[in-house]
Length: 175
Ligand SMILES: [Zn+2]
Ligand SMILES: [Zn+2]
Image 1 (cartoon, rainbow, N blue to C red):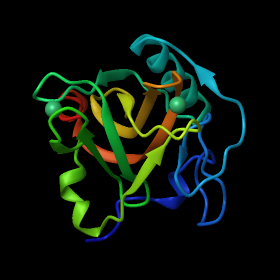
Image 2: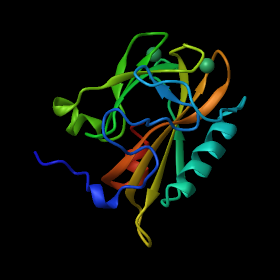
Image 3: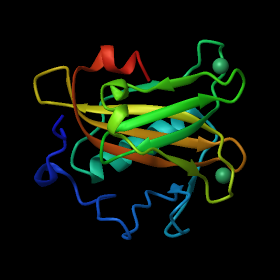
Image 4: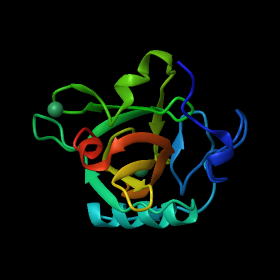
């Protein structure tokens, strides 16, 4: 399957070859070093605000949002992503269920997901998804995943990618 990512259509933020920092507002994967300004919040609204701010800077404003919740009711997860392929996997810290977020199931076979770690070294987060849509439609154009660290309350966008996933409501029902 060809990659659905069009490099020419990607924003500058968080995009780069291996070795370049892809740090996003203080959110880091394990391979990355601490850098930049960090933002902290206490509610899902804070996380959503940070996601929206990031998305505006990225040129594709997120207009619809959804918080992740496991089937068991738990809201804290470990997160793995592969931004190049467009895959995110959350693992419930309570029941252990793994869930492929959004349309990730379509691309997971070609993915090499990496675990995200906060700058405080915690790996448990509350997750907020947001999408931008094509103008005049409800079709997803860009997907953002923001996290709030349950230990230190850092909030930030941990991953984002161009995403042609169709109907935003259907997509966000699967985050
Ligand atoms: Zn669960
Ligand atoms: Zn933290």
